[in-house]
Image (cartoon, rainbow, N blue to C red):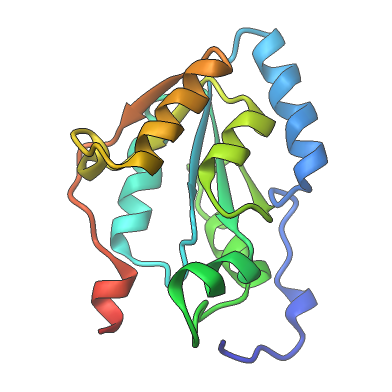
Amino acid sequence: MLPIKNIDEYKSDKVVSFKKAIGIISKLKSKNKKVGLCHGGFDLLHAGHVKHFEEAKKLCDVLFVSITSDRFVRIRKGSGRPIFNEKLRAYMIASMEFVDYVVVSDFNTGIEVIKALKPSYYIKGIDYSNKNDPEIGAERDAISSVGGKIKYTKYPKMSTTEITK
């Protein structure tokens, strides 16, 4: 992980606690606002992520981005990951004008995040639209179980793992 001096200088009011995110989403939905959720590690921010968030915002009124905590990125991606720690990843994503809120989630998959936050839409990249692996199936079930829908952005995936190989 890239060491950052003075990490506390990288703050944004758009980065909220998980508990606060639950309350914000509930309040927004009670006002008939459509809340979108993108979830992932977003370890090395790149143009594919930016385009995904930009397109996701067009699908909802308020866009939340949930980033996977350092602990679970390390478990899923291995030694040397994440490249940037969770505070810095949250700050970078929060700096985008089309992202309304960012939350760090200490869960291994998006399933738990969906069930806790209960967004209107769970927004994935187009590369997931025809995917039939167990995890995406469980995410589809999770969003349905909270009364939401899965939506897809239209741009092809760019992978941090592929970029860093």
